[in-house]
Every structure is written in C-alpha cells, then in structure tokens.
Image 1 (tube, rainbow, N blue to C red):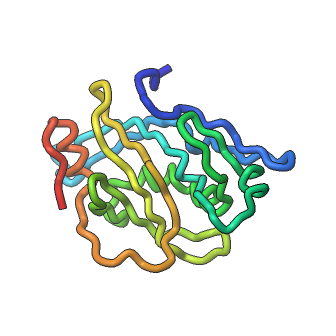
Image 2: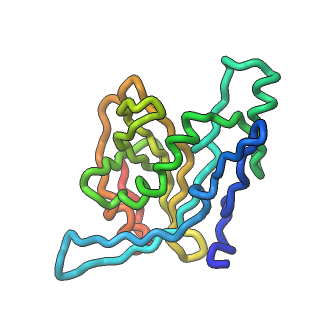
Image 3: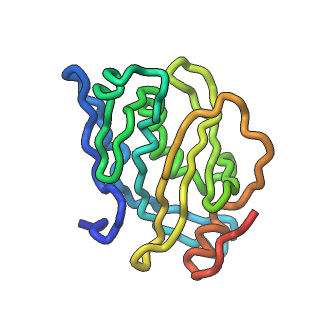
Length: 182
C-alpha cells in the first residue's frame, strides 16, 4: 500500500444508523498532485498525501440527549465523537476543495500554529456559507503531507485573516525551510 508509512487513518469505516449507510470513503487517504504554474518556464509539481481527521464529520454536541449521543457515536481509532449530519454532507466537498488549494480562488490563511483554507460552499439547505478547513502541512517519512484536522461551516464570519500562498507552503516544505508565519 502506498500509504503504509502514514500515521493517520487511511480508510474510514462507514457510519451506519437505522440500517442506513453513510459512506465515508471520500475521506480516505489520497495522493493529490498540485502544479505550480506561477512561472510558466518553471512548472513545479508537488505530490501530497492527504488524510482527513474525525472532526471533518463529527462534532461534540451538548444539545442532544445522552441516548441520542450513544446512537450517533462514531468510534475512531483515537477518540469517539458524535456523528454530525451537516458536517458529513459538507465533507463530501472536501476532496475537491483540497485539490483546489493551489488555485487563486481558494483563500489559504494563517490560523495559529497551522494553516487553514476558507471557501464558500452550499450547506444542506442550499445556503452559501464559509467553510473553515483547518489543515496542517508537513513532511512525513520524506513525503509531503496534508492532514485536514477539521472542517465546519462558519455562520458568524471569521474576521480579519492573513493570507499565505499555498505554493509558498509547498515550496518551503520541499526545501526543508521554515513555514511562513503570520
């Protein structure tokens, strides 16, 4: 398997509730190729192994009963959290969002110790929302890696952000340089 050295979930098990299967295969590990075409005379290819975390489709919820919480519990390898239908529906867009990180339309910004992307998507009600996709970029076993820690809609707005170019992140990783700081 090409992801045997990756230290995250490679293949998510489906969530089943009342006989209905919620397929999570769209969040399985993948190899994504990014082409940096900013300099047409020197096109650079970056290959990232991409993994997704449990928080992309689960959410701690205080507004449901303990009985409902038990029914909706998704047991991951390191933690268990409540399956969240809204996050699950939005997560189906994550693979295409991740593939678009190098495009000008995808806003990649600083967020504390990691990076994140904000894109506009339609939620399950057809309403356009900002989708906060928190990810880390790093090297693992000499390979470039992206791990999507969490992804969720933002309804209140996010305030001021400091942009960073995705290809600046990729180039620094490839050259073993420090990642850009806010």
